[in-house]
Length: 497
Image (tube, rainbow, N blue to C red):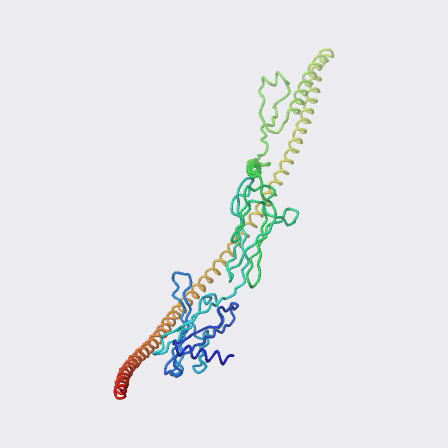
C-alpha cells in the first residue's frame, strides 16, 4: 500500500507540479521541551540541481510581530542558514533523496506557539502546492489565579467575583463553587451569571455570605484560589466608624490629662527651699517696763521661730508676774517690810525669766536642729542630683562617642559604596562597549551572509533565466519539429493519394 501511495504521488506530482505536505496538523509540546516537525515534498522532476527549503512561523495576533524565520536549507552544497536568534536552539536536517525536511526546536517557549510553515523552492517547479503549515501549541499549566471582589459587599448591592490566571496555554477555563457559612456546597442564586471567570451576584444579602472557590483548568493541570465573602448592612459600617472615632477621642483625652499631671508635678516648689529662722532681740522701753514689770530690763523676740502657743505662754507668764507683784505689794504693806519683799520678788522674777530664756533657747535649738537636718537632706538630694548629672553626662559622652564611630563607619561605607559604584559603572561601560562591538560584528557577519544569500539568489535567478531561455529554445525547436512532422504527414498523405 505505501508503494502504491508513493507511485500515485509521483504520478500526481509529475502531472501537476511540486507537492509539499505536513502529515500532522497539530503538534503539542510542554514548555521547555523539544519538538520535531517533519515536512514531506515531492518535486515534479526526479532530478533537481537546486532545492531551497525554508522554515518560518506566521505572525501572531500582536500588531508588532512580523513572524519568525528559523532558517533555510540549500541542497547544492548542503548549507543550512540558521537565524541568529535561534542559533543553538533550532536545527534543520533535510534529505533530498528521501524528500524529507525536519525542523527541531529545543526548549520551546510561548513565542513559538503559532502556525509553522515549510516552504520548498525548486527552479522551474513552481506549480502546485509549494508550502505546508501546521500548528505548534506550547502547553503551559495555569498559574495560581487571583480572586478579587469588585463592588460593595452590602445589602442590596450588585457585586462581581473575578478569577484570572496570569499564564496558561491553552487558555484555561474557570469554574466557581460556593459554600455557605456551615461549609456546605450550595447552588448559586437564580440571577447569578458566570462567564470567563467573572461571577456576577445581584441584590446580595446575608445569604450570599460564604466561602467561594475558583478553579482554573487546562490540559496540563488545575489551580485554585478562594475568598470569603461577608455581606453586612450599611449601619454596621457607620457604627464601626463611630466606635473608632470615639476610641480615638478617648485616647487623646487620656494623653492630654497625663501630660497635664506631669507638668503640674514639675511646677511644684522645692520642699527645702527655705531659709533659716531669723532671730532678733529688741530692747524694751521704760514705759513698757513700768506697765508690764518694773524689774524687766529687755524683751527677747524670736521672729519666724515662735508659734502661737509659745506666745500664749509668754502672756500667761506676764500675767502671773503682775499678779505676783500685786500680792507682794499687799504683803509688803501688811508686813511693813517692803524692801525685803521687793528684793525676793525680783530674784524670783529673774529666775523665771532665766528659765523662760533657757526654754526659748532650747526650742530654738530644736528648730535649728530640724532645719539642719532638712538642710542635710537637701544637700544629700543635691549630691544625688549631681551624681545623676554626672552619669547623664557620662552617658551623653559615650553616646557621642558611639555617634562619632557610627559616622566614621558610615563614611567608610559610603566611600566603599562609591568605589564599588565606580567600578560597577566602569564594568557597565566595558560591557556596553563589548556588546556594541559584538553586535556590530554579528551585524557585519549577518550582512555578509545576507549579501552571500543575495548573490546566490541572483545567481539562482540568472540560472533560472538561462533555463527559461533554454526552455524557450527547446519549445521553439519542438514547434519547428512539430511543423516539420506535420509537413511530412501532409506530404505522405498527398503521396499516398
